[in-house]
Image 1 (cartoon, rainbow, N blue to C red):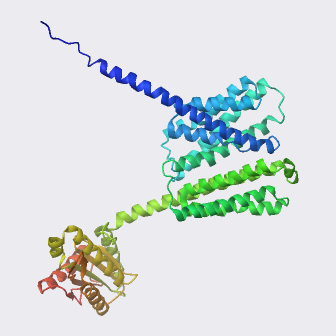
Image 2: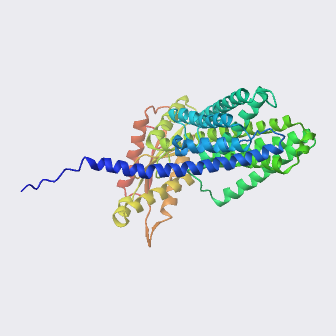
Image 3: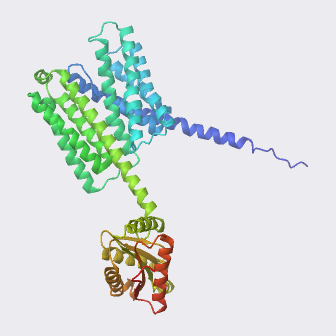
Length: 481
């Protein structure tokens, strides 16, 4: 009797693949449908503002939606953008052929920059100057160039006579899409992964946004253009302040506030209101705000990079536990100080300090308590020395202090003050208090000292001499020999 059963192991991956496809395509369809609805909705909003602005649309939000969606969720959701733009075009009375080509241009407008930016390693947080420039050039400039060029070519070929010169319409098309990407697109990119914000920053951003929105609204609707320009100039300092305080996310949030002010102006103000200032001025105002947003993003990215660089430098030069200089950085200062003593006009002093009771604390309370004792000691040292002096952690419970431009008598008094301050304040851990004592050795730095390592070793030897005498004392050599 045969008991062999057919081996179905090879068919299992195929079944899993088919199951994944059954889940993948409905999800893709759902996301594309949601993207299409969002694209259509923002398009309707943009066209509403356009209708009140005598036929000119310098604000096109869907471009920002499409770019952010392609970058965050993938280009595979392009049907949502295509059909969203197609429906918007049909609702606007555009012929089907032109609507089809315009929809294709909208897909390419977002897809091509996303492909190029991903190849360049673009960071959506916009906290790098390189990323801001790449985003601006490829997404906010190149992408709209593609869409505007395809759209105007389709209009001129299928419709022929247009209401304005081709170059003018192309510029308005490009500007509107560019504004949508650099404002709404940048906002969605910078906020999608980190949307939380503390309450104080939230209210500060809301206040800045209201101030900027009111300034833009008054600038656009003001009858006297000189005052309008002055009001619009407020956009730059407000955006720069937000860049320094809140980074790229703050800039993009305020850019939306400015955008909303333009929409409110266009949707609620009678078209005749713009007769007091030609529509060209409105285009200039919008372009100015776009430049201010770009400037704010550059400043925010530069400040973020500088902050990150300073943080990296701090971690490289400082001990992570005590925040004092680490051994390598302290030795750099020591070598430079020894070199400055060769002019025979100045003398310095080097202190070497070693805790007497760390082992007792570690054995009785654990290494976490020992680390806290080291931090406690470092804080006392930092608060006792002068601003011009240099303190470092050279080992586990060992510290070094470089007293610049001083003599033995001052160094002796300061060493005694450090020892006394540490001994006078027992270390508290839980319900127990532990003695905190330290031994100190010192070495004079004058023109006879030439080697940093030997100098540190001499100060260390004096410190261990103090330990052998019972600790909790300072022995400072009054001569360099």
